[in-house]
Each structure stands twice: as structure tokens, then as C-alpha cells.
Image (cartoon, rainbow, N blue to C red; front, side):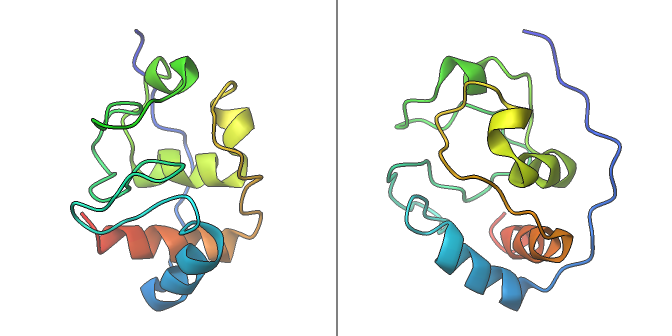
Length: 115
């Protein structure tokens, strides 16, 4: 599997408190983020940054995710959040994406608290 290089993007500054609200509204239906949290329709997202895509034990990922060559970083997540199905064609994630750059930055700031 080829390693997917980080995209050349700037991660916008974010507000973790606003990111928490976005997570609750748009992510928590399918994901948990607490250490040791349950797998739901999607995998637990605690410690996401630095984890190779498709590798969390206990979740059945799509081949597309497992073979993406991505090691999650803020930059990969930024592009993924915009349009998951475009960034990893064949992903099982049904989320349409976060279109607002400010919301993307806020959500990434929130994820930093769960490393």
C-alpha cells in the first residue's frame, strides 16, 4: 500500500468549545471520541491523529479506508471533512461533509483535546 502524502493545505484556527457543539450535532450520532469509547455506526475517534486509516480494532472498515495509505493528521482530516466520499472513494461514511472552513477548524481543535 502506498503512503498518501499530506495535502498541502492550511488548517484554520479553531475553537474547541465550538467544535464540541459541532461534534455533538454532526458526529456523535455515529462516533464516540472518549478514550475507550464504544464503536457505533462509525469507529471511536479518540487518538485519531497519527493512526493509520482503517486500523482501529473492533470496527469493520471499508477496503477503501484500509487501503487509503492515510495516516490521520489535521491536514488529512481537514480535506476529508470537506467531502469524505471524494477524499476516500468507497468509504462507508455517509456524512456529506462540513463545507464551512471555520467549522472544520473548530472540529479539528476539538479533536486535539482527545489525543
